[in-house]
Amino acid sequence: MGMEAMERSGPWAEKFAHPEVLELEGGKVEVVDLRPNNPKTAIPLVIEHGWVGQPAVSQRNSEMLANMGRRIIAINAPHGIKPSRENPDIPMAELRKAEALTKTLDAKHIGKADVFTHSEGALFVTAAALEQPERVRSIIYFAPVGLIGPDSFLQLTKRFLADQAEQKKQSRAGGGKERAAIEWVALQKAIGAMAAGPVQSIAELRAIVTTQIEENLKALREKGVKVIIMHPVNDKAFPMERMQQMVKGNMVDGFLSVGDPKQSGGEIADTHNAWFLSPREYSAAIDSLLDTIERNIAAERA
Image 1: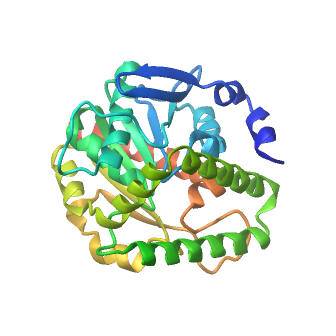
Image 2: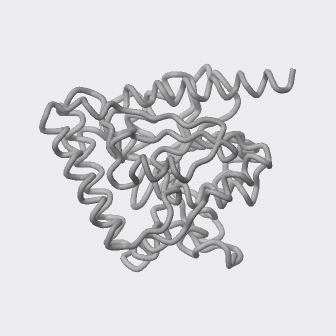
């Protein structure tokens, strides 16, 4: 099962095969907008990927969450769009992606959203939310960057290679055809995004190495945004022990360790890309977290 087969499968396949193209000030953005007939909430869930990631990589997650009753907005802008203004506190590579997010919300007339983001997405989603906190109800960060302290490009590269090796080990131990297909899609999309923007890809890597967001998380909570971190216990790219040293209680509303480091096969993949490699488990977990957030907000207002 390759990329073409994945794109043809499922009731939402047409949305992924032919995404909506938004002509925004600053550039074009592709959007996959899944609207269930009976939505469980009026608040849509925006999915933002990490470095060179795209909606096709997490198609299974989006489909499953839509089938659970959530409207899904999956944004495809691997290198963002030209921002309307500069911000010296935000690397230009991340400002471009933050601009794509906020401009997409404008174009889709979305006043408030929940956001799920992976890896590098933590940087630009945080930047966008700080700029317009009234539009973000909650952010679920999965394996976020910017929370392990000082880093270097060489060390980052070594850790990513180690994480990929562990990911392949798990796949060989029993990942199944679906996981193999997802890995293939992720590889093809990553190569395409890097080829389309090599200079921007390097700039994004530089931002991953140099940017820290712990103070930003505190600011988000002070502005009323709910902050949840889900982190795989065996993430070798951004090690759990380093993140636990950095993340304090006043930065988050919840910190969830996910995945079993003792499990060598089966559905649970506890490496950096776990959420889209095991879509059944993680989509259900994301949906449950969002339900909890909504109940807690309702209780606070009562």
